[in-house]
Length: 189
Image 1: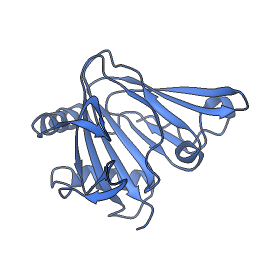
Image 2: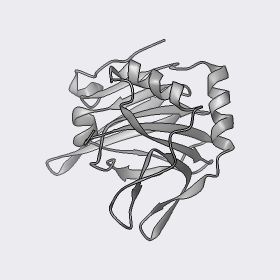
Image 3: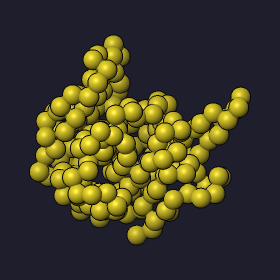
Image 4: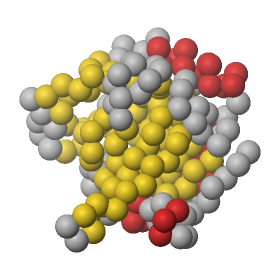
């Protein structure tokens, strides 16, 4: 396994971004893709808008109409071992992951610039199926400071600190079907 630990150099990426290649093996990846594909995924809803990616939230979900977290179905048993593995890698206490978001990005689908909602603390993402460009940007005067991470299949990233709070992130339209599982901790737990 290759770990690209915390980025210390300014040109190397946002402080607080960690990345690990081959976090899981190919068999585990295929099993997770099968589980996600079998979920009753719905197009992502944010207010009056609908995204092209299809998702299922567990533990908690952000309700854009109410502008708050609301409870979702519990994190399923098949996803808990992966959540525990992610927590261990991140140095988080067991049970810290309180939200899981399974996402299906069809060819040509991406996600625009954003920061995850402030209710969440650490953000950890497991990439499945195909690689993607995981882009970061933050305003620096009248320009943007930018960084792109090539997230490979089966890799895990973590955003905390500056990467989480000061940088926006996005994924341009993917060239091949991609799945992801985003694990989030909560600020108030």
